[in-house]
Image 1 (cartoon, rainbow, N blue to C red):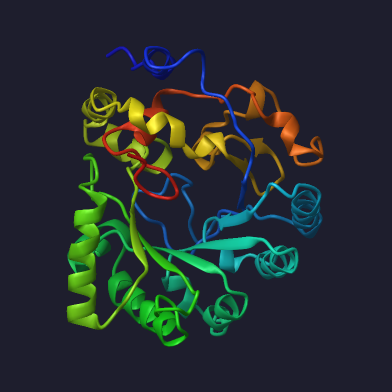
Image 2: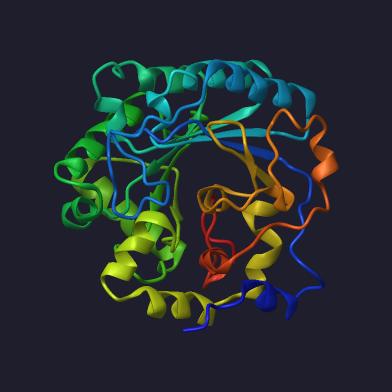
Length: 321
């Protein structure tokens, strides 16, 4: 099969390549250690990973936030970001600068030894929690994420709810993230949100702010599974055949800059895992000062980008169109 050409698809609907606008979100992958090893994980995170951000790099992240007022949001991801020593200093530093902070949380980490006060810490710092819950049924969640993960996730959600997350007028946002079990596109985000709300509220008394649907990206661990099962070619064709030009204006790579645990820069977390660096050349957070200088640069793309533009689109904030 000839690989679908993402740049050609974009060129049919826009003049020239995708280009970056003003950077408003700094998404920082603080490391690849995680208490889980999910089948769909594009980072290939797990308990045995040792890559993690050091204090010097974390301090440089805060310096960039301070020097670039356009950066409204610090988006922390991993792995399980809460397991890394730099997590709380980054949260405190960003909040002291008046920035919004997002914690991309797998939920089960809140029940790990040593994390007993993490949920309370997140609430005290007014951190937005974006939590992975790939389905509202035990069977589907555990097929993706492992045994006992569903029950532990529900327990963690109840802890967050007791702290005020998703309560009306609390200001504490709790979004849930759905991704398909296998090689298919997510259903309608709004319709699925209604079903999630009905099931989680009715069966477990759990509340959340909104649902985010994300397409499984055909890279790393999920790509290996597709190849193993003989589904890779069909999945790539599915994504390419459902290319939606209406998603292009809101692609997250246009206003986001991704930072790896060692300080290297990328257009998004997916490009980070594919080694596609900003501007096509190695750069780190020590090579930039004023992020407005990056505006107008072409964004690195490849076939996996069809994952963000298929159907209703997919981003770290959910559907795009």
